[in-house]
Image 1 (cartoon, rainbow, N blue to C red):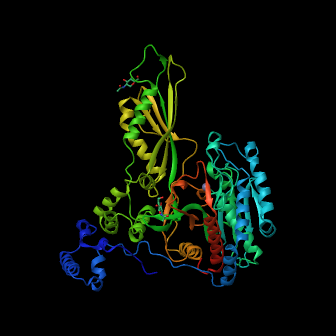
Image 2: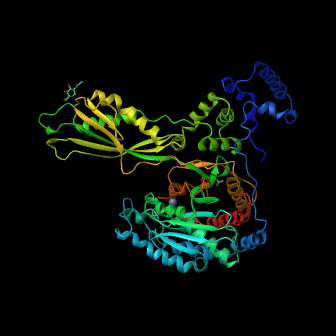
Image 3: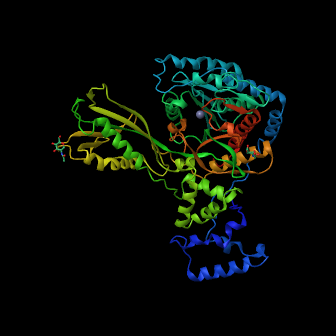
Length: 583
Ligand SMILES: *[C@@H]1O[C@H](CO)[C@@H](O)[C@H](O)[C@H]1NC(C)=O
Ligand SMILES: *[C@@H]1O[C@H](CO)[C@@H](O)[C@H](O)[C@H]1NC(C)=O
Ligand SMILES: [Zn+2]
């Protein structure tokens, strides 16, 4: 696929040259002279279009970054697709889609943090009525696909393909929703579990996360069966029920079931919830998540002698812990935008395709592929956006603290927990080492023996005043996810399907597909061994609507037209994957 780099011409003008002085961007002095000569000639004539673009671009343009796949449309299934596209455009289908999704929203399926396992915690029983609803709403799916319930409420639907040598397609979604805070119910324009349709928008908890994904997949399969489609490539649907609580009861068991039955690397590709598509800097971008940050909660325990509060030491245990925490916040991780990372690639896509990107940023980004100076300059501008900066680097947030029992007793112990989201190009080990190092000087200053993650950091035999211990709180943490390969048929197919869906629904070739990451983890964290081709993506157009900023809060909704476009995406994905011979 030929690279398509569309930039404003000023992005290529000589003013973008200061970066070429860095070691990586250096040119021989002869080449530089030739370059400058041609630059001057071209810049001083009206014959811009005749000037050799490679002379302009060579030192600064990222030539093969953000190449775009062409739209992929069904060939073997062209007639079926055309008939389905017609069906999706009807009022009858819109009413069905609204009823399907609205009905699902009306069955509350909240999942809470720290729920006891299925069988012990009665709150899981909310998922029984949801299964009843799905059975009633999607009779063809239940009659045609084999359904297995894993750990009672996990759902796996399997649709055998006629050619068992082809790796199946795996589609995921989650049944649970974020709990509705009872104090905020009155703030909802329409009650959170109403599934109210106002003529344009469908309202309620789960309408955007992720009953739209789950019901969208089931609506697609129901309609495909009604239209007589029989898959050549197998299709597996896997729906967890505690994604919003990290997935230990749902996705963890589902992934284990799938791996036992199908084996490692058994699926052609996997699509789960994830990035939406929207307008960024004047251009429509679809951003499938190709990676996820890692995660660890580091617990800090401090112990020091107790006693009566009337004769206190200069620092109590709580004071010591506080000093350590202040030190942690004063020494944050230094985020670094590195070449080859998903966020770097996302930036390059913006530089290549977004018309309203500030021109100083574009210039820096286009030069960044070869110049470290330019990369740092781009980074500086990009990091002014807190969200972007947080996605790039390892973050730290002190989220829990505890210590002390009585006003007249010196606390003997105190603890806090620091939540980290680990950069895609870092690791659990690097994060632990950073934290160990950060507290070393203070531990010595306060005369605390120091151990971390089961190892002594200071000599444990020496006599100390107190004790500092770092450990994994709750669980051992999660490495950053493996990065989905971009030079693969699966990425081409997903990109091309996004483009074809956009074209079918909105017309034209206006959407740019860019790799990216999401701020949180999805159920896919358990699925890494099933396929390297993992895409966290909802073909959900959210425009630039500010109402949509936080789906986990009040007034969650989805535009029905955008929801029907999601169904078209799932349809095209299934049909394209079915006839692909490259996957
Ligand atoms: C550290 O504390 C222990 C126990 O209170 C004490 O014996 C020792 O002298 C202290 N060391 C320093 C360097 O203050
Ligand atoms: C984006 O939002 C702004 C402010 O609400 C609005 O003026 C603009 O028309 C919107 N752009 C698009 C393309 O929807
Ligand atoms: Zn979700």
